[in-house]
Image (tube, rainbow, N blue to C red; front, side):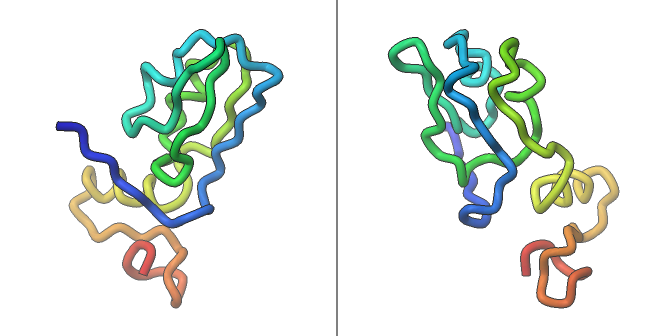
Length: 102
């Protein structure tokens, strides 16, 4: 069963340029959260808010049709917390430095 995690609405840095897209489907293959789909020989974003800003799509896009500021925001803070064992801190909480997305 595939889980889809949703983050904050309309905050992802994910950008897509359909004019550059060659429809290879690499973004679909590498995205862990199913953000993309390919139809009519073009990729399209089907759930932008599911993007965790890992950067896999942008790194694997041969046409440079996708950009994302990987390693920023809440997703990066959560991943870093897995490795450090500390509470995630992304700087977007009310006080700017405690609990991720608080």
